[in-house]
Each structure stands twice: as C-alpha cells, then as structure tokens.
Image (cartoon, rainbow, N blue to C red; front, side, top):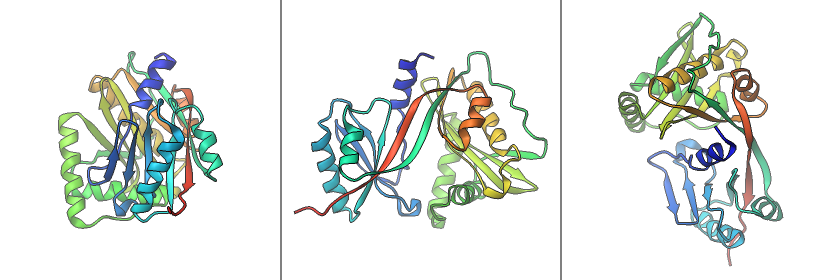
Length: 262
C-alpha cells in the first residue's frame, strides 16, 4: 500500500452510469449525467500529459453544445501541472474536497462495532433499488427518483453485479426504514467504496459504520487486498480514520463557468 500504488488505483477509478452520455479521447473523459442525477456535466479524467488550456476549451465547447453553462472538474492526485491554477483563472469555485483513503485488507476487515439495531440488506431487486435511490436523494439532497423502467433496469444490473461479485450496494435499515447506503466495486483486487451516505435524522447512530463494515466484509470475501474510498473531509473522514484508513492525499472538485462560444 505505497503512495504510488494508491495514487495509481485512485487515478484508475472512474464511474458513470450506463445511460450517461460520454465524450472520451486519449486526453479526457467528459460525462453528461442522466437527467435524474440533476447534475452538471463532469470532467472526470484528464490525462497528466494533456495541454490543459486547449483541453478545457475543447471540453467547454462540448458542454455548451449540450446546453450547459457550468462544468464540474475534478483535480485528482495525478492531475496535470497547472490544472488547478487554470481553473481558478477561469473563475472556478471550489465545490468539494475529499481525502483519498486506503486500507490494507491483507489481515482481514477491521472490527467496527456495528450497533445491534441496524439491519443490513443488499440491493438486489426493485424494492431495495428504490430504497437505495431514496437514501441517496435524502442523504445528499440531490437527484430525483427515475422512472419505473429505469428503476427496473438498475435493479437488474444490481442483482447481476451482486451475483457475479463485481459490485454491490449495502443498505442499512432502522425499524424497517432505509436510512443508509453505500456501494463498492471490485477491480483487480481493489475495493472501490463509493456513495456512502446516511439520511440526516439517522446520523450519529452507527449507520455509516454498519454500511462500511458490510462492504469491507464483502470485499475481503471476494478477494480484495486494498480498500479505497474518497471521503468527505467533514463527514465520513473521521469515521474512516477511526476504522484504520490512512489518508494519501486530497482531490478537489471545481464548478467552472463556461462562457458562450463565438
């Protein structure tokens, strides 16, 4: 679990839903999220050797063609030199800062002391898929419930991922109500932990810890040697540190205005 290994695992981590619109070149990956995400387009990969200004101009033109006037750009551990300064020069506003955490799983998952009143389930059908989406909307105060056809498709994908061992989403319930969720994807022995959130009125009751424990147990059972998570500094960060995760750097997202072309 060297800094270089963690940085490489972090740089290799990109995710977007199957129904997103993408533009991908050797230099970058630009994502237009499905409407139910209610999110700005995101530049989620930028090659370290890219010409920063030219690439930002090209990406901005595509964002404008989609009808948006703002773009989210992530400055990752392997970001090109000068990217952050270039964004700030374009009037970008800092949106989010996450710590890049990693945990060696060679000795097994940590014991996290999950509360007895938290019930865990896995997303595997339409009912649990709706629960996962509702938790995400309430926990992060963004997004909306997709239509029934999309829910059905997402449920089928989740069931297939769970059965194959590729990925899974853990759900936490208190008194039968879904209050927390978090996913993981397994790639080359690395468990990428994503989307961990708890609805506001259930925070402070060990729900996030329960979701984390379920995912780490699942990761070890499926052969993962390293867990990687990008945790919000103010919220999940302290919990992850107490669980034994170490910080290997920070990544920041910026909201970048895209002026009209011409």
